[in-house]
Length: 416
Image 1: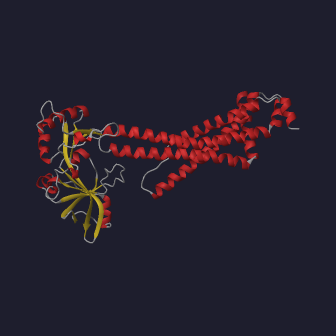
Image 2: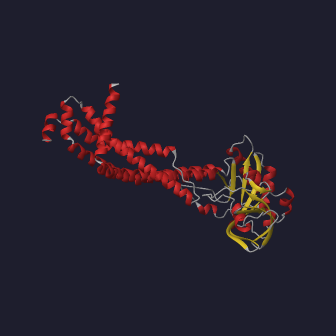
Image 3: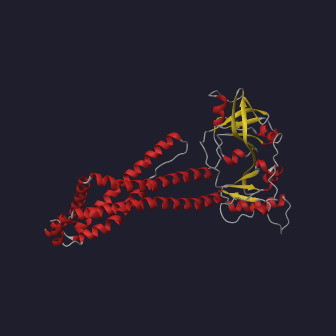
């Protein structure tokens, strides 16, 4: 009870001191507010960016292995000259993989062209992607359709001119009309729209289908060079239930080496990539970004901390006479120390709260004007408040100690 009473009295004195010097309090808050705003806004943007990237990466499937010419790498040495002469995955290899793979649930061949233009009557949309896929693409990728259907097995097998179209393309070309059964044109071809992808929103890593047109690969080979590196051909292989990616990669290595007729001593002329490679790269990248955010925000907080310390020394000087009187009537050193320490912490907490309020306001405005989702997380708020308290303790402890160690006689005399 005594401890609580001491804390209550120290807190009350701190409040009175802050209210009694409104202008000084406001100027002191400014430095901390800017510092907390700087560091937490960086954390909020970085956390939101990381969350969006991870969600987009996870949507590719953690049980899918991608067979490509080039290996994915996010750090370290990359001997590109070793990979340059490798052949690209080809559509004729697909049936062999489907027959021989024992650990795969589904295998899909995918190739794509970028920055194309689609047209319907007098409307057109630029910058779209065209993906040529084998029939099992839906089984591997697992996308959702808002309307219509995916290709039938017959349409895929015979190469019918049909397409599943992204929601952004539908909005631009059809202006609210039903796109199903309509014929659109792109790359000199006419195709029938049979399905529309569920709107996914912008993807930072570019795997959103909102701006894509997906067509059967046997139709695409009439006008696309599927064996060209320019269309980035690959196999997407989904593991069976209970099969690990390592088991699937061993199975893929066995079959791909057989398909490519590689001798036992020859190196693999293909790459087996998985989402964990991207995830590890993301971890490294965001550790660097977080460190940069801490350094940037740290300098701002350092300036704010010096401002608080300076104001606290001024406050001790102004109240030296009061400190002497308090000590003369029995106030202990820790009471004086807590009184000034609470004042510094309270200043930093208010400044931190204002900084967090500015960050929250910024996230609301950003979400209204850009499609990228930025959010102030509970972890960001907790970090901001903890940093504020820490700055308050560090910047206020020396002035508080100097106040607590004043001799009561000398303190009273200095105020006369």
